[in-house]
Image (cartoon, rainbow, N blue to C red; front, side, top):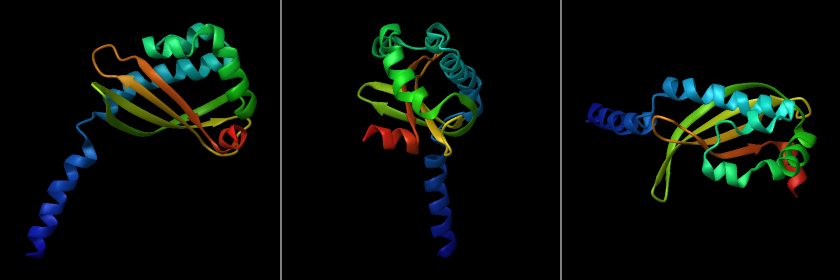
Length: 144
């Protein structure tokens, strides 16, 4: 009976852990897109920064409000991007849309802790970035 319970538990948990996402395939397109964003921030190059944005992000973070949001609310607080490491890949649904969510642990020059860089990608053959979030202790402290 104990073996059946363990087997049932394993069969139940394995699909939930994998979510049917090919992490390596996601990383193949996500890594260079995120690198463009982070290097574009370092260079204050909006074209490079927004190169892989979808329509939602292009509207929300356009060239006119880039300085006020990225320079003043992000870069002045956590500094320049230095490195990143993939932490998690997941799939979520919001309304009628499915997104691949990728979270990186990144280091920045003025932040002593990791910075979580969370990106929502559209699914499909030509994924685009539709949400970009930065989270770190200094960002939280300065948001209060």
